[in-house]
Amino acid sequence: MFCHEKLEVYQKSVEFLRHVVTIIRLLPAGNSDIINQLRRAAMSISLNIAEGAGKTGISDKKRYYGIARGSALECAAIFDLLKAWNLLDENILNDPTNLLSSLAAMLSKLVFKT
Image 1 (cartoon, rainbow, N blue to C red):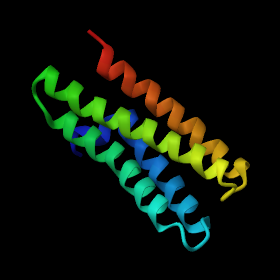
Image 2 (image 1 turned 90 degrees about the vertical axis):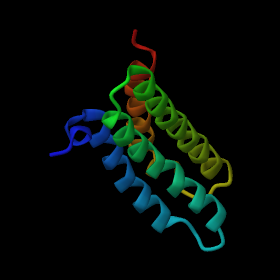
Image 3 (image 1 turned 180 degrees about the horizontal axis):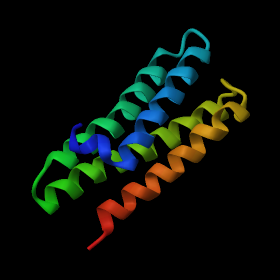
């Protein structure tokens, strides 16, 4: 098992990706721009957590976890856009939004801990 796979925050990020796949499948045709942006931002969370976990220096770890946190916040903003554009029933976004909020909090602790 790789070091990042042991992290709860990484496991939650993969769970979030599963939600994103479902959301993307539910979005109507003609929304490829927002779909691509959501896909990239969601993948960035997991990828940067994994890369940060593999770094040996504290500042390197924090930098990658910070990037992952930024991507989580980007996903939250994309969810706001999806709601504003009425592209999905808001209830569909409840569970992924709660998971995303938990992810962002966990990443904040990793970035800002001294």
